[in-house]
Image 1 (cartoon, rainbow, N blue to C red):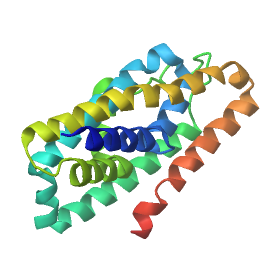
Image 2: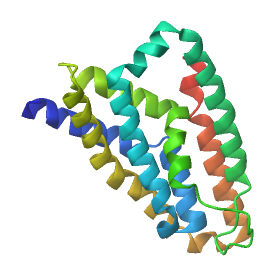
Image 3: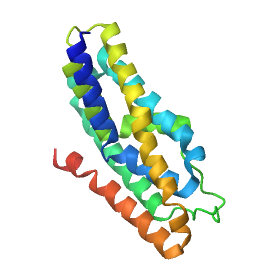
Image 4: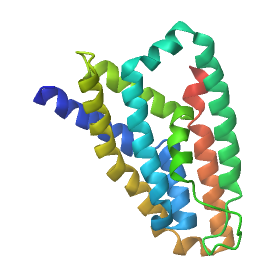
Length: 197
């Protein structure tokens, strides 16, 4: 991969990783409700899970959805249902002091698995492979995946850290409720491109 393509890939990975989307909204909510340290497995799951997705898309998984478009429709339906359920969970999240003992941050495996239901993650993976792996080799797919992972982790950390910074502000039940419902609403709004495409 030449330097020009690598710089373009870095820019693409940064912009798509740092801008709002389901992962970042979830990480901000987790940072606010559970703190940064307890959100680290979630962040690692997002970054490593998405990198694996990028690599597998390059190896040909994307072709499966091209050959069987019904799988794409099924994935879209499952994604919408799951993200609406997550929005409901956001709206009813525990207070930062942990008064709801059942509430837990997303685990590494849950966050990694979520990438397969995240429409933005799919778009990022497909776009990266199409634009930045023109020679279509396993090595180029691996490079794209590694660059995404290296760029994504610091980007998503910003959102979790931002959530933690508002944590003290959210000890007031009204503010917490407003924050959680706002994040739930934004997550639902992030589904609009899926619903209109």
